[in-house]
Amino acid sequence: MVIYLKGEIEESLSLDDLTPRQIVSELDKHVVGQAAAKRAVAVALRNRTRRQKLPPDLAQDVMPKNIIMIGSTGVGKTEIARRLARLSSSPFLKVEASKFTEVGYVGRDVESMIRDLVEISIDLVRAEKVDEIADKAEQNVEERLLDLLLPPSRSSAASSADPAIDVIEDTPSSAVETHNRTREKLRQQLREGRLDNRMVEIEVREKNFPSFEIYTNQGIEEMDINLKDMVPGLFGGRTKSRKLSVEEAMEYLMQEEEQKLVDMDQVARIALERVESSGIIFLDEIDKIAGRESGQGPDVSREGVQRDILPIVEGTSVNTKYGMVRTDHILFIAAGAFHVSKPSDLIPELQGRFPIRVELQPLTIEDFKRILTEPKNALIKQYIALMETEGIILEFKDDAIDEIANFAFKVNETTEDIGARRLHTILEKVLEEISFEGPDLKEKNQVIDAAYVQGTLADIVRNEDLSRYIL
Image (spheres, helix red, strand yellow):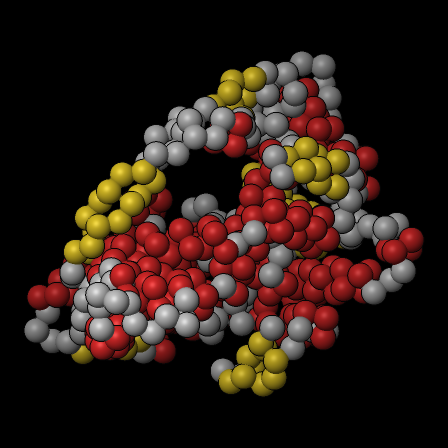
């Protein structure tokens, strides 16, 4: 793990060395404000590393401290959770609680969130393993391409098979040396990209196996049956010759080599362990399923969803195609606006599984200004970089940033409060003309000041009905 301070690499730290204060500092680079929420997730992450240092018999009894974030949309709830997962290299899944329905209703089974998390973990671990074998795979692909470009002669094949054979009776040894020199010249040209457009013929595997979706009383679920493994040779066993450019063949052969070199059994084992020990599930819109049983209507389904989610949160075993997964130590971060309902409307058993409550503050004008300029992926930086691809140099004056922040705050107050997402809408409107005319603009230096912002937005903001639809 590399920690960046003031834009420079301070030192290389592993996750074990990151203190809660350093975790908050890292989150500050991407999310403005919300100190209380950052402190809560930093402590939760640190407690994981603390638990892993405990004796096994004690560690298994230390449960994760799940969190409920309370705040309106666009204040940073999802971004905090996502950045926390990236910081810890943890499998991370965001899922809306409202997409689930209780067993017996049409909708997704709650256990599918664990299966989805496992798939994400598989992809993460496989990517790491591919990085580890990248050099070996590249070497193998290079040799296979050279064999296609310059098939081995009988003499070179014999000499490589048996070093004791220097000369074959009907071929002089100089032919072997000539072949080897030619091969090395081709290798150099291949590395320099000078052979990318040359055509080669390779054997590619046909992909003609069917896929299935199964309709059950729990909705449409993926049927995890691998027919290729059950009936080998029936699907995808045949190959056909195809002519590809060297560049395309290199990509195809690289995938083949990765499949050969990566041990998927090991990947699955590591991925399951990672899900169990460091998985993070972000349950958004949990306020939409808050509600007690009223005997009829949608509240019955809401409480049913809560009762279905409860065993997953408190710890159970879920069957996946890679094996059983224990959910005891997965960290659950729930979030909701709670404008209509409140956390106490959740069933008591579920409330007890989320001991940490954090209220995120509404964004102020100053927050908007900081969001526009401070984070590593700040919106202003994104738009400047986008327009640079057209050769246009955008310059935002301080008064323009003030004006954009004021407009965003005003529109959020008078219409629906969507937090920082309002900045995306306003900036798109401000830069619409420049973005459209970009390639044809003769003046490549464009200055955005307060007057320019007012000129593009004033009429829209003044007309409240129009601003509801446009901003």
